[in-house]
Length: 290
Image (tube, rainbow, N blue to C red; front, top):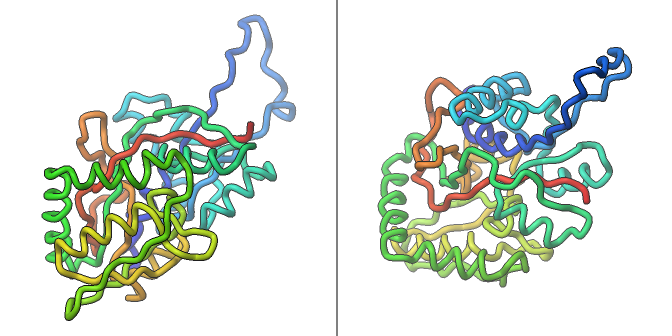
């Protein structure tokens, strides 16, 4: 199982690649001595599993080349890893890091709730896709989920849920809700983190709310399964899945080009995990201090 979940949060690490370009030096101006050069910038990212900083840089460099994007946006000087979004925000506010990157949906929510933060580098490449993940032995279950997601997209249900629980809220907290129970149906434990608000949102009283609850309530009816929500930190999701603490991860992030084609994964191939088709697409933004 050593490489089992390297993919999952390795994909999340693409979120750390919001770069800030500096101005060009004048041609006649000599370069400063090495000991006077500006220190490396620090970019926050949620903790990966199975991918260190150098591995992350190699992968993001490949993505930059495929997307025709300057490497400075996808290979930051130093990556600082965090187990959850709250600790990363606090590190930014205390200037332990210079910036972090996140899906635009999440960035809008964070900035709405933090007056001292702002969005930077809007709509960075590549496009992000949110999917669900289970162990490979549960691939038949993922196939069933894929059919339900495709049907929800085709009949307009997905867009309706996104509009009601994300777009129309405009960064406000969603309303707490519960997922109805189906008598006699199998129960699957699903990991939610609260680290992707308002897509995956947990309120101050520790109650899941918003899109994750609305989406899973609809999915439950379509595949005739009950979902029990289990709160875990983003950095612990891989371990929770591999240990059997949960059956499903609510979100893993994949990368896609402007035409919706999946880009290469950071590992040579995908082993030990089954990932659903995306149920939502998003762009990327950076978050920095005002």
